Every structure is written in C-alpha cells, then in structure tokens.
Image 1 (cartoon, helix red, strand yellow):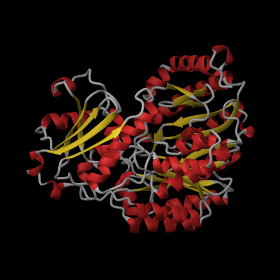
Image 2: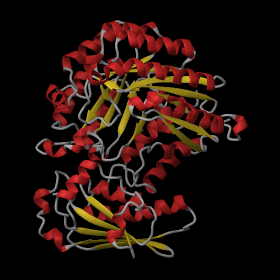
Image 3: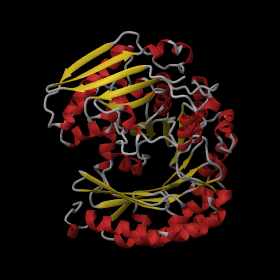
Image 4: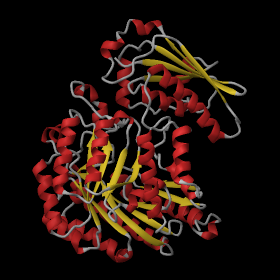
Length: 544
C-alpha cells in the first residue's frame, strides 16, 4: 500500500518544489496539497491551482471505485516574516497500515517521531534566493528524518548543468561552480563532478556555434512497429496507421518548406530526425523525405545531421544505403538492453542478435558515428543484467552511448498497468550508474550532456557519453536551450530562444495525425507569428 499524506502550506509559494522534494524521498507517496484556511473539499474542484500533475482517467476511475485511503502523515510549511518552518507528524492511521510490510523495496519508512525545522529567509523579494533557502530547510529536514541524502541534493529541475553553465558563462571558474553545487544545492561529490565535466565540455562545443544567429531543425516521424511498454512519446503503430504515412509526409513537406523560407536569413546548424522510429517507414519514403530536405535546406553546410534509426527491427540494408546517399553524419541504433527476456517483456519486438547484426551492417556501410541508447532500471533487471548489456555493447564499440534511468511517466503503459508488474523489480543504484560510466570511460568517451526526468528510478539521471568529436550537438542545444529549434511534424514543439538566450517561447503542433493534416495552415500561422515576433529585428525582440 502506498503512503498517503497531506502537504499543508500557509500560503501559495514554492509548492511544486517542496512537493517534488518529498517525492524524491518517498517516491510512492500519494501527496495531497492543501492550504491553511481552505477546506479540503474546496481544493478538489476544477478551480484548484494544478500544482500536482493531473491524474489520468484510469487513475480517476480507480480512485472513485476504491475507498479513500486514510492520511498517514502530515507535512506542513509555514512562511513567516523572516523565516520558513517545516513540520512533520505521523498520524494514527499509519500505525494500522503495516507500512513496513507493504512499502516498495528501498522506499523510506515514515519516522515515528514528530519533527520540525526552521531556517532564515534573507529577502522575500529575491525569488531565486528565497526558493533556495526554502528548499534547503525542507531538504535538511528530510535528510535528518530519513538518514538519507539524494545524489542530486535538493535539485528538482531537469537540467543540472544549467547551474555550472551559468557560472562559466559569467566568467566564473570551475571551483566556483563546484562550491555552488555542493553548498547551495547539496549535490554529492560524484554528481558535482559529473555536472562540471559535462558543463565544461558542453561550453567548449557551444562556443563553436553561433547559437543566437543560427537555428536547428527537428523532423518528427511518429510511427513505430509497436509501442514499447515504457514509451511516452506520441507514437502510432505503423500497421494501424500505414495509410496515413504518405498524407502525413506530404503535409510535413509543406511545413518544412515553410520553415526554410521563413528562416532563410539564419544559418541552419543541425538537423535531427526523430520519432517514433524514422526507419519504420519504407526505404522509398525515407528517400523521398531526405530528398525534400536536400532540395529545401543546405544539408552540406550542416554541423550535424542525425537520424534515429532506433529499433533494429526497422533497419534494412536498403534504408541504410538511403541514409548514406545523403550527408547524414550520425545515427542511433538503440538496443535499450541486451537481455532478450527484458526485450520481450517491454515489447521491443526485436532480438539481441538483430541489434548486433544491424550495428555491424551499418559499420560495414561506412557509418562512423553510431550512438546506442540504454535504459537502466527496466523491469526485472538488476546489476547482473546491466553488466551483461554493457559487456555486449563494449564488443560492438559504438561512438557514443546514452544511458537513461527509467522514468515511469504517467502516460506510459508501464505506469498505467504497473500493478501487473509488481512481482518484477525496478532496480537502479549508484553502483549500477557508476558501472555505466566506467564502461563509457573505458571506450574513450566523456559525458557531454545530461538531464533528469520526474519519477526516475533511483533519482538518478540520463547521461550522454561520446568520444571526442562524436558528441550530439543537437542534444546539447535542446537541453541547454541556447538556440531556437524549429520543429516539423505532429506533436512537434518549436522553441524560440531570443533576447540573448534569456527568453524562450514555444509553438506546439497538434499530436493527432488527422488534425495535423487538416489544421496545418493554422500551425504554420502560429509559427509565423512566433518567428516574426521573437526572431526578426522588426519584431523588437531580435535574437542578435
């Protein structure tokens, strides 16, 4: 049974940051946010501020059909004139719940004793400093209550490198960035060095690109042969949607030509074709797509051109030869794991042997920059299984390796039906993550980008490792938000970066395929308004 608690605030301030911190220590906890002076019934209506992610329809039906769980604990945050106070109390309901026998493996137990901690607030008008001071009080309280520290300290954002990157961009030293991570955010020594190593390499690569006057392009192919159990992307099973592929591509070509025309005064640095699985379409369709890009954009002037080959079961020699026909500089062949039992469980639809075969075929055809994606924390996999995967990957010797910690996102089938997988473990640990780093280092790779997601196994991170010169520039650009990225395709999100990188606005495409085709003019108009307003000098917000 999951813990259930109330999180009560004296006012609406920093709710999500504190909610996220408590979830790091108690990942399975069901947290209800309330405010002093407002009845709980009032806070369940549609007018409630959405500080907690909205529940899915499946979760809502389950909640309505089940008995309402008893609240087992109360956390309180009180903001005072010159301080913040954090309180914890275990309620009698927890005594009868036999938490010790039902808590998920590795989850913190609720302390028996009540607890309180306070800390000073320097200046309520300084929002950034105040947030750090408030989070510090809550984090210190939780570490003292549980005896556990988080590898990333009290950081709850998804881009830890932004902190050292800002220090370096402002002319500060590595030592200053290190002190900030450790003393202000309580980041561990290991993760501090990882963030610093990554930020230093990122900065050296970004300094070679005109980020403010250039742009990058994302091209989305939202089709896959099957939908993996952990997938949260807007993918469509190819067998079901096959008749929509050609109409979809024709519509996207219109969007691509529009982008090329509107952005003709800016230099295109990178192109990334993702999905879905781009190689799920036929070799002829792939050739047509790349031909349109070649006719529309200056492909031979690009710094990088990536195509996600992704699923080995979608890769054929014909498709690889199509990619070689164009100036594609980087591809991904992604096993996620080299354990067949896990591949079958998560619905990957390919074999370990196919991964090896397709990787070797790509090498034979001359691809000299191949990335491989792995996921740590997959159901049923522990250290032994991860070490087996790493050994098999080392034999193939890719040019870059991206290690993901499994994130149980709300929209994934793995999360929606996780009760079916309770007998199967979801294991990750500092030791396992260290082993992935050791493997990457042994292959001559360095960390060049990293990010975190909500609900990640073990509260760890996703890290991209690469040999010198084989880094994925697009990955850095999208993570560090240093350059505008124009995106084409259903569900694609265009990101306008302007005002010297200080401001970011977005233009989203609809996810539904038929709506994307029927409403393409509406989405082009949305893009045009953003380009005119944020990226062109006459709009008053020039990126230069």
